[in-house]
Length: 335
Image (cartoon, rainbow, N blue to C red):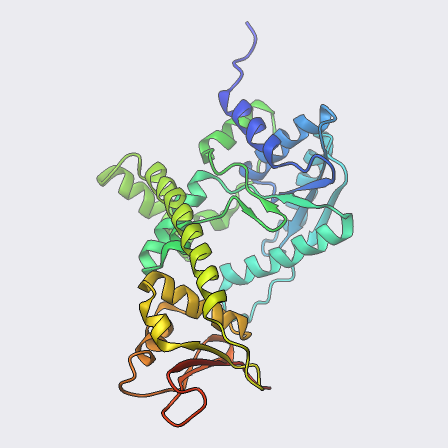
């Protein structure tokens, strides 16, 4: 009797097929763990069928004493799968970053991804986030009291990046690796309770499964899908309204919009319009607290500002007698 062929293998292959660039080179980002090795073997199936050009990149964060060996083992397994080219890139993690260790590693990882894309000329990169990662992301967003976009979780597509395994579980990827006789690396950081995401993965989600809902991971992933669709629609509406409300920039690049027109917009749209203006002025996406503070400027009572926003951008209400009277003014940072 032939060995059982797991359904997870077929599901991964179908998902990856839709994510590959049929004309250019696609890279699989691989850490050597079960998720990324499962992604690599699904992509290798299509390369073997001459359906796509597929290579791989292993990012070495140099955060573990055995990172050099982990990288070498991953490179060897990827080469045996038939992917080409297979390269490694070092991620320079800033130990003094104010972002915290997890965010600093992520920043360095995406810089390394950009380097790999430029080095190989690849047009797409596949990342191995699973439904479990999505559930963790949504739960973290809920804990922070985040908005719709954050609750939308990890996007399936963003720029050159594709995440085809968001419909599969971590158990699926482990099954795929076992079927392919691959030896995934177990990153000790995934079980390190010093890191919030690790606590969510190893303590909080298992507790919620036992005490609240055995399908909590699936439910959170479904929440992400619903929120993503809602957020996309709201953002589309906000961009259209922003284009209508935005007046010609001032002499120093100030962005101006009529207060009354902003007040007439639904709150969900209004806050997004203000955020778009802040980003257009060179700032970064403002927090809910900062957006709420800016909204208070619209009522023509109390302080007219300025309010400092992320990225050094300022917001104020034009006062009586000024050319900007009854307008919200977003002022770019002037270095």
